[in-house]
Image (cartoon, rainbow, N blue to C red; front, side):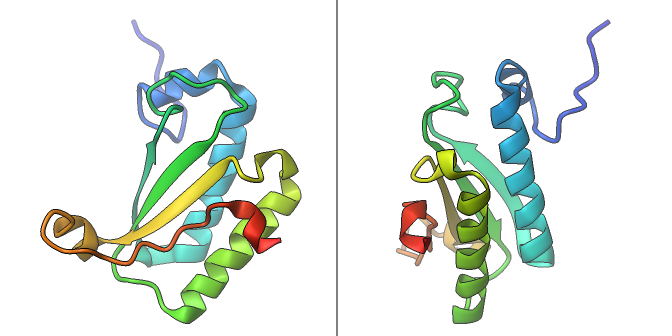
Length: 128
């Protein structure tokens, strides 16, 4: 019988992060912060790039897309900037290694037919 996935991340990512527990802990901490800060506006989180395909090691860059129910305001952008600045202060080795893009649900639905603003946290060092 297969072991239950107790990770907050879906398979196969949970299995990849099992081999890199320090990376999994940092990503889970960031996930918790995003959920706390964005609340009901957060629709989904998507990991993309080399970590999601298990082709990277624990020291490579990581990209996350946050799907939001509606586009951000200047106040929300300020909150996100503060969140990423605090994250990098707590985890300096992740400076310039993690990027979070914030895209609205309407932007995702229409990405093939129109451009949308997609605020991003990268590079993280610009917030410090």
